[in-house]
Length: 499
Picture (cartoon, one colour):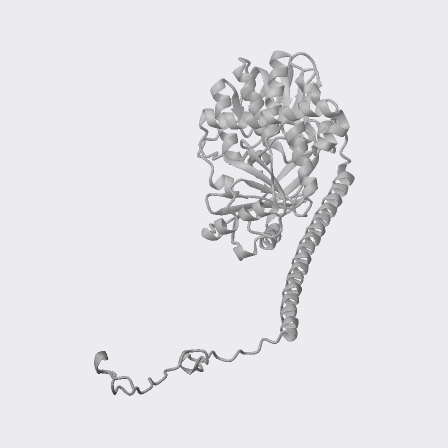
């Protein structure tokens, strides 16, 4: 079934199958990311390498995954610390970060076409547990030395327009890529270094005894000093004991038709987003305005078309403003998980090496594994022994698969119920706050009303016009001048005669 990756892959010619006998230093079985990285790094060190691929390069999980490139492993680091101790776990974490840098540097230095790395990864919490998120940020930042940011709910919801998320951890140095185009570019780099890659050349049998090992294919044979098994759950009868240590896990992915501006309005963050440890949603924007969304897990293969409605419902639950999302591509991919959820890296027997079990966290860890095995085979380096505590443990066969399926269902249900309860608590808190604000407003109105009853605010009489004011009784009145008899007054003084 075609994927969005195959629809947007860079054109490459098919490699011919092996039709003759060859003799090399190392034979790598599996042309996924682990096998291609191993082949490239061995060839760069001057050794001869042949890669046998049963179908096409990166046809399985390596070319069908979400494309997230992160530090760490599928196993939570608290489990790793519990198993091997802090200093050992810290060394493993550093190796996982080396894998991340290797991928980024390879893309940049070789200018691999169509890979399109975009920075950032956000792990959003569906429950309002800021203390736990803060503790995680401190552990990874202070103890493991990772560049990490704690985003509060407001910042998360500013870029992811949904009430489904609260706090989040942000890894600014993580990124996401087109994994199939990365694998195709890696194959060309391996060939440029001297490796030979044969497609449609399944390994039918191996003889790992002796100094020179033998691998048979339908039309040819390989003799090699070392064999690297890098085919994960597809080992099958080639190495049944090793194959029995992995649980096959299928996940389901869709990509939407172009959504235009409504996608940017709902999701303005362009990094990868994860809101779960196991079961639910992993997504990112691809092709400018398409949504790539994966979720749901089965331990038996199912028709991916059965999951279209479920994945559409998941999108609608988180981003109802997107409306009905038309789906253009749907596919599944199978990965291999050990019970401890850590990679299987190291020497199984003299000259027989294993790179497997990357468990849904594979782009950085396959790069890490390829470098570790190349150093071990060519240089005798023993870094691979850091993974020795994570043994090859039988995964339980069909019973183990059934138990794992039940576990995923339980985790999925638990996460959904916890998320719903968190949203309900937030909504109830909002309503309580609104009621409190309403009561406060009613109280203020009531106080004003009671004050008005004590001191009636009667309307005052209008002030009289100045013209209507009464006369001031103290103001001086106009007094008529008395009449004066002026007879004789005007006569000269000397003329007056006294009586």
